Every structure is written in C-alpha cells, then in structure tokens.
Picture 1: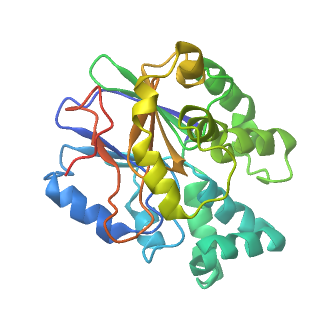
Picture 2: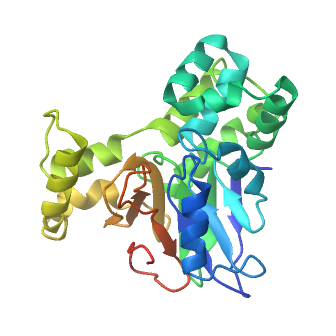
Length: 280
C-alpha cells in the first residue's frame, strides 16, 4: 500500500475520524455503539497511535483492514517497527507502553510489523465535496501538496523495507509527519499563552479550557500557521488536548488517556462538516 491513500466519498453511509486510541478498544466500541456505527456501510479513520498503554493494542491492529477501519501510521507504530529492528529502540518503546509487543512470539511480532509497514502515513478523504487530510502529527511547511510530494520521495525506499532509523530520508520524513509537535506548541504557547512553565496535567487542562475563547479572538497572523494550504481541513492526533479543538483549518483530536471522565474525540465527517465537537 502507498504511503498516501486517496479515499473516495462514502455514498452508502457515514465517515468518522477518531484520535489516538492507545490500546483502548473497549472505549472505542462503547462510543461506536452510541452512534450506531454500522460496519456494513460506515467507515472509521484512525489518526495513528492505535497501540501501547491500553490493554488491546493487538486487537486494534487486527481491526484495521483499510476498507471499513482505516489506520495511518503514528509515532507509536513507528516505535514498534523500529523496536523490532533495534534493541536500543525497543527499550524506548517499552518505556512508552510497548512492553506488550515484546511479550508476543517472534513470529507474531514480525507479522504485526509487516502489516503496519503497509499502512499509509497520510490519507486524503472526499467528504462530499470537501477534501479532508488525515495525518498523525504535522505536515510539511503548512502545505498538503508539499507533504504528499515528500511522501512520494521515500515511497520506493519504504516499500523496499529500509530501516526506519537508518535511512536518513525516511527518518527525517518520519520526524516531521509522525513526531513533530510544533503546531501544538504554537497552540499552547502562543494562542493560549501557557508559555514554558511546568504544570501538572490538571493545571494544563484547566488553563486550556479557560483560554479556549482566545482562539476565536486571535489575530490572523497568529492563526496563519494553522491554515494548511491545499486541503479543506486537516485532522491530527499526537498532541493531547483536553477537548477537540479547531484552529484555522486544523482539527486536534488526541483527547483520551484512559482517565475517568475522558472520551475519545470521535467526529462524524459526514454530519458535522464545520466542527470538531465529539459525538456523545
């Protein structure tokens, strides 16, 4: 499968997008039941990081078929791939919730890596006349077309099975699209004015929610980094936000850490074209 996947409009049902799952299949199934998700006609697009931390990483990987349940590569899937290649990276993956992977038989590890290596790094979806971009962490230079060109450059190398860490072009592209936090940093520091002070998660949550109104009042110059060229809307995971938030045409959906009272950001693209409000 290509690093870029172009998906046609769903004429039979609805399309949903969800933020980072991190092994929480039970929570996903609960929320899919609430919206009467029908796998016979509806589709679910996952923004990467399906694995690690939660109890059901392997089941979530098995769920992805790129027909009804779509997955794009996230940095945790990348750590899984790299950890299978490099013992030092395996230690890093274990420390970030990946211990489940190394308890599996070697043959199963190799099978899961072979499957995940076939996932796209970016998806473009036709949502009824609007073109939606899906990527885990960030795009290149605020441009969707530049992002797709960068993926095309490494397509052949990645498909040939090169190491995620040892091939310089692949590693640099992964750093930008799977790991980069610069957009979220600008959201927290510039738009919400949270600066660099160290705070507890509870303090971040409180201040984030208190200052959300500043986004609507921001000057156009401050919003410029969040206006991605060449796409109508961009949906991202990777960077935790206490609730789904739209800035420019960027939609941040990584809301769930398994804490009490939290919910996955599950958005219906077919019914809610102009909002990131999660479905309840």
